Length: 108
Ligand SMILES: [Zn+2]
Image (tube, rainbow, N blue to C red; front, side, top):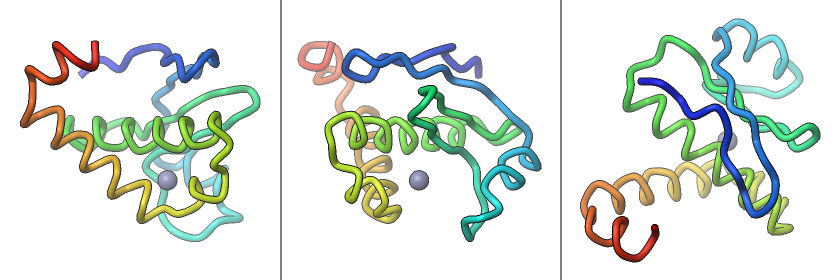
């Protein structure tokens, strides 16, 4: 799967980049847990772990996009709630999969 090079969140362009698992862990070592993606706000960028299964890449990208949306809309506290962000990412992926017509007609 080829990732898009960028995503526009409101008026902010987030560059999307695939990086190694090691690079993600190293730059997040002050935080706990294992990282499959991360989002930075200045400069705006989203990094996704390379060599994951296609479905994992997609859900990780949606997860990071939700972080960016929450940040751009001023919901930084909510953006720190990883389980909410992840629940929303899965719900949005399922919504899109189960309702192709809605995506085509309403969200395009
Ligand atoms: Zn997250």
